[in-house]
Length: 257
View (cartoon, rainbow, N blue to C red):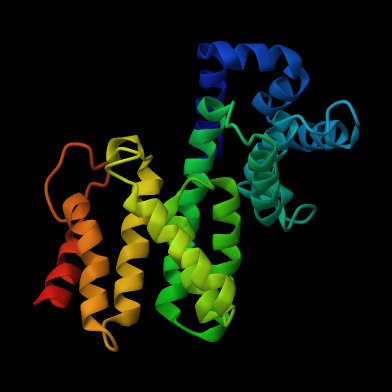
C-alpha cells in the first residue's frame, strides 16, 4: 500500500503546475520520499520546520507526515519509530493549520483521504465496543480528523457527539451545532458532488450515529436527524461517491417505521 500511495503522490507532483513549483523548492524532500529514504526525508523536513524562514511553509509538514505514514506501514521501522502513525496524524494536522487556504489541496488531498478512510474504520470499531475507554480513543482520533480536514461537517458533528460522551458537554454541544450547520449547507452553499468521498462517508456516519444516540429518548429528534441524510444516502443519485448505502436505508426504516 505504501508504494502505491507514494507513486500516486509523485504522479500528482509531476502533473500539477502548482506542484511543479514546490517540487523545485523542496526537491530534496521529494527525491528522498520517492526513493523511500523516509528517515532522511523526515529529518530534513523537521529541520525546515525549525528554521525561521521556512517554519511557516506548509510543505515540509506534509512531507514529514507522508514519510511517517510510509514508515508506519513498514515493519523495519517498528523498533525505532513505534509511534510513526500517531506522529503522522499530528504532522498532517500541522500541515493543514499552515495551509489555511488549502493552496496545495491537489497534492495533499489524496493523502488526507487515505488517512481519513483508515481512521473512520478505527473509530467505527471503537464505537462498536461502546465503552468509556473506547469512546476516549475514538475522540482522540476525531480530534486529528477535524484538524486535517476542517471543512468536513460530518467529522465535526461526530467529534462533537464524542466530546459529549466523554463529558466535555459544553464544548461538545457547540461542535454538534457547528457540525449540523455545516451539513445543512450541503445543497446550498456547497454541492453534494463537491464533497470528497470521505466527507460524504463522515456525513453519513455522523448522522446515523447521532440519530442512534437519541432514538430511544427522543424518537422525533432521531427522525429529524436521519431525514437530513435521506436525500443523499437513501436515494439513488449519480453524485453519491459511496458504493453501498444499505446501512443507512436500514436505519432510516428502523427509525421512521
